[in-house]
Amino acid sequence: MQAEALTVTELTKSVKYLLESNFSRICVLGEISSLARPSSGHLYFNLKDESSQVSGVMFRSSAQRCKFELENGLEVFLYGRLSVYEPRGTYQIIVDRVEPFGLGALQLAFEQLKERLEEEGLFDEEHKQPIPYLPSAIGIVTSPTGAAIQDILNILERRFAEIPVVINPVSVQGETASREIAQAIKQFNRLKNVDVMIVGRGGGSLEDLWAFNEEPVARAIYNSRIPVISAVGHETDFCISDFVADLRAPTPSAAAELVVPLREDLEYRLEDARSELISLVTRKLDQEKERVAYFAKRLRSPDTVIQTYMMKADEYVMRLKRNLEKKVLLHGNRLDNLMQRLVGESPAIRIDKYGNQLNELQLRMKNALLHNLTSRKNRLTELVHVLDTVSPLSTMTRGYSVLTGSAGRLISTVKQVREKSRLNIRLSDGTIKAVSEKIIPNESENEELNNGEEYRTKK
Image 1 (tube, rainbow, N blue to C red):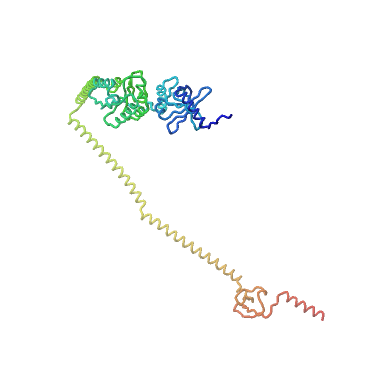
Image 2: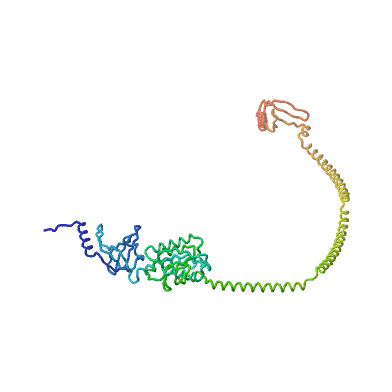
């Protein structure tokens, strides 16, 4: 007979019921891996050992209560319960508390935050501000009911009671302590009269001092424009605030001693400085008196000094007069030389000189022009004679003529003339208008002559 079948959902719910009933509270040791931090604030991870692994989830409310940061590779104790994630049918640990394996949770959180802030540079010496030697007012951030505030006030009263003290009371332990301390530091930074702060509390366990290991306090101290002295616990206690602050005091009482000088010491120093200043001024006055006495002995009568300068003035006047006479004589001689040279370079003399040269050049130019004109006239006569010799007009006087067409175009061959063409025959004494009756080239003429001779022979 076949057993009744279960659906996947029914099977998953049965397994979930069995797991949650039998493993309602467990503690598991393992190594964190595949850690995921979505924006929801929940943490998802695997917890593994050498051969197995199991999924785990830590919801946001539980994660916020964790004092340290979960990291991959960190060995931890997980406290919670087993459950089944029904959509996938996988089991996982619902974690509500985590403790590190080896170091305590607070110590691990301390080391993690210290390492992270140190990497950011919050501990660097270059960011430290100097503590004023004599502050105008002191701000104190601590519990108003603790022993630390009484110790600080007593020491400040004893050392320098005149300096004002402003107390900003806060809780120094508990969940809200770090926020109160950070807010008090910011409030002091809005005041103008406080120029140094003491932030601290008396001794206690690591849990008691934990507010001074919180990140908000560290960043408030780092961002403070007012120098901060961290005074937390005893000399052997170290907190994150000690590393960020501008000065660490081993105890609150030591902070009070560091923040102001002892009034009596300051008075002694002022008295010593006053005495030394008076001594210096006295010695300086004595030295100046000796100098005055020394110069008074060397100081002569004003009349003697005036007479000396009067004689020097007369000497300078005579020397100046002699120098002026020498210069006048020298310049007079130079002026005579220049006048002589100027006479030699007189414009009238130069005009006469250049006038003679001009007359001579004009005569030479006139002779050259006449010679050139005669030479060119003779040359022209020769050219005219040659032109007459080759001129057509001269040729025409010997019986020749020039034949042109009706348009005046020169005719040099019978090929340019047709029968009945109008012709102009120019002779030496006139022109004849004619018409060509017959054109007979030289070859035709010879041919006719030859034909006539042959005819006469045959006949």
